[in-house]
Length: 341
Image (cartoon, rainbow, N blue to C red; front, side, top):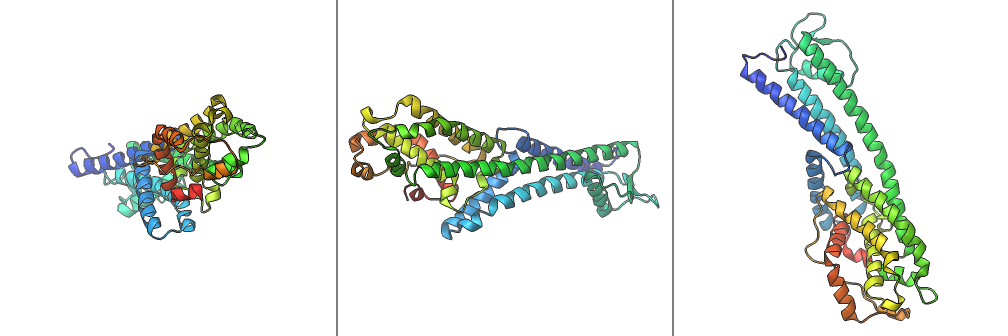
């Protein structure tokens, strides 16, 4: 028997142990094998820790310290999965007084010895100091060892690609940064010989890069908590600058001088897709839209622009989008002023 049927306490300990194992396994699989966001446990913990840290950051800003939170959460997540699984199996093997015995004396193990047995079985060390007693517990030991092998192998294969995802994220941010420092700067740099055609090649190549990073946010939701200490490589800031530049081109530049909708729209939709994954990090849109860009630099660069009223009307149409952009930026530890700095 796996546990003593006449002992209510044994049954309760067994049920709690199995429950911890199943919840941990579900959270682990939801995080590592799906592209719909993080697990229910780690997702809430990450969002809560990040929210508390941002509150502290808003009082004493330190981007270098904030940059350490992502790696810390990654390590914490691995330890949480490992220790929760370890605790669960320790409780399961503590539900029967004779489940684990000393290999030499055959005396029942105490609680800490059962924890030791569960630990070396999960890590497949198999020291042999203690052993399961009975056929049922031997089978449970095999299941426990398989659980540990699967957990540690998959955890490593989950964390390693996060590094490459961070590289892709920083590369995209650097690409966007090369197009201009601010939204108006992007527009002004793209204006040549009376049109914006010099920007067209970038508008063709960028959507695929943005889509790839957006999908990686879903596959590895912990990416939301990796903070770049420099705004030049901070993806939320760079994406906001790029999208605001596209809004200026679509709503402020006179119709006769704009790029075609077919040229701009693919990138706009790709950025929309990136903003749609914010829910995976429990990021909600800002309550108010950020202030619109000052068009005076465009006027000084002799770029034909519409009236301020026309531009304001267009910006009202994209209010919801800009609220999400604002939240994307501020929830990464930056202020909206950085977008136009």
